[in-house]
Length: 337
Image 1 (cartoon, one colour):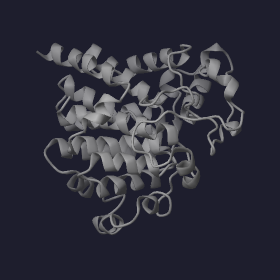
Image 2 (cartoon, rainbow, N blue to C red):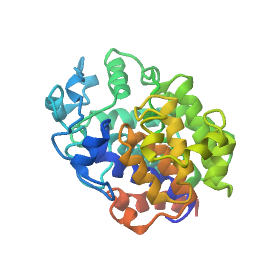
Image 3 (cartoon, helix red, strand yellow):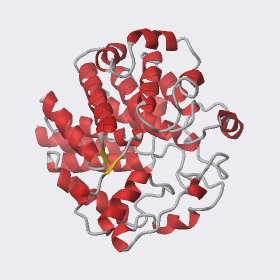
Image 4 (cartoon, rainbow, N blue to C red):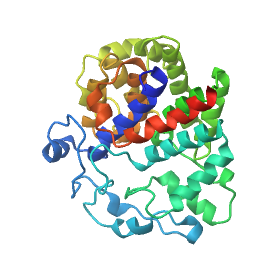
């Protein structure tokens, strides 16, 4: 998995897994107290000093909307880590779904939105399929709409969270492996996929920008050139140059919110990717240490830096998903041979 296509997907998975234990720490002093200087894969700890899971609520209307299963007992409790049962190097649920998306595309030889929705619904309804305690708002809204009798194609909601970008590296890589070459078709399929769960212009525009940056790097551009060309509507070169001299937690924390909301979450991600354009390890660690919604910023930071750089073996070897990746990509490559 040394080519840019595989690396960009792998980079997103690594960035998520590194950020997982310190996900949604908005007080970085507490993050440092609980985990020190994050420099590798770590296991999550309870209590999570910044957890607000106690504020979250989801009650399935019926069995069609049941997605919490045995994790429901932890909702409403204080101090619960959002990913408490995951191991060091393991991925959060959105990226576990991303791996299922890759499997679906490579097994079928093409992307099919309806086939994906069927698999998405099946996996989320299967008790024990994942061990993540938290599921994002869009999952809850989707399955609540489904439980009310709506067709899966109509269950997505208008959403402005950067989590909507989590599947882009996976789908991009899978489409390339099965032989999809037309850039416009890739852009359209990625936008269609994102819109199944995240509707509205904010996520759509970010999805298109990220896809075009990845296409640019694939053609041979470096990370900064790709960001400069396709990120200008979000942040200009002059500002990026000024920000690269700033501390990471100034960039994401003071200049741009560490929270999940677009457009700032995307802009902050681009600023980190620009600063660490030639340093994969430095970039994913900086993203994790900034706290907030670092897992989902990882889709941007990890994929751009993975596409544009080699990935040190230490990050590949410690990733729990690693053993699943080569067989998956072998499916697509064998079908093309």
